[in-house]
Image (cartoon, rainbow, N blue to C red; front, side, top):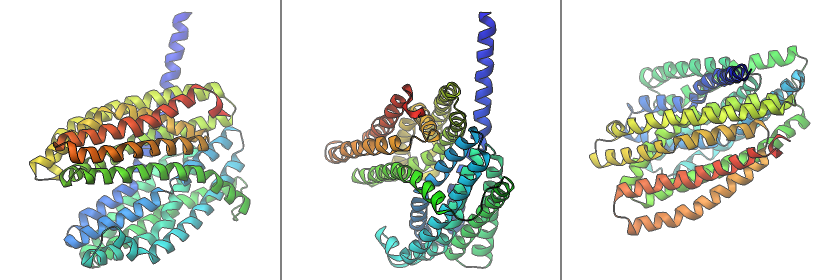
Length: 450
């Protein structure tokens, strides 16, 4: 009898893991859409000239930061739709999704207009001068017009994740990347539109993806009796959910900005190595985030159905998969890091710093994987205020520690390798470890399921 019970438990664990993977793998493909757009832009704009490439760096930083702060549109919509679906309220869930789309469109239009108008001063504030400033402004003014389309993608992704139908989001991401590549080549290399052509190609791809996902979402909502008209109360509710998630994201982004500034204080070589490690880490984090998003949708559905036992089971399974995924990725990250420096810099010293940073970061990936998984669980449970408060507290503590530490390293630590290891170890122990500590403490109790 005991063997039968153990067999059933293993079967359930395997089934749950497969369910998480079925959502996580397509989600990862969708998550890398925007970084892929920037990567394509970089590869093609590099053929225009150095000033254009430098301008692209500034412009892409502006759009990625602005759009990244609106990721709450995807998270809050996912949790709301999945929760209502689990409660057997499919029409209400799709109605919440429509409200999210209207909110995304409104924010996207306001964001696009504001960034278009403020493009030049923003580019100048980020260090743009002369021809670089001109190129950065041209790119920013072109690409920000696609902001409404990209935010519609976020909200629509939330709908499909909540419905646990994520293959369509992968199709949208892949086809959008292909369209962007074709248009980039056509506009930049054939029509000779320069960096403006690059921005135009990306904005068209962003609107294409938005419409690709919004049209079926609207058709499904209409078929289930949801209203397509903007509802002030529904949009306000969606915005209310988004505020604490926005604060959470803002705290994390602020901590990252301070990390960049700290690397700069430690010297040009450390900053150069940091940039290579950071860009590689951002790409790898999408893999970890995809596990958390899968758990987010599944736990929200379970809690909507009032099944706390299932929510607990999913939490444990998602946490295990996050840690396992982090271990595998961390090992690969560290091993690749030993050789990756050759792809980022011809300077042996910078290559060595990249290797030191990537190996150090790789050691902490299991922690990051588990933390991101539980983060997704708490978002799925709509525990937004707790995440906003704890992320802010962790970010404040991290800034209070890393700032004097950077000053100390600048004056007292002479080895660039030691500075690099110190920077990344502090980042992981304080910022990532602090978030993991708060998240782990939360899921030990029951308040997050209320």
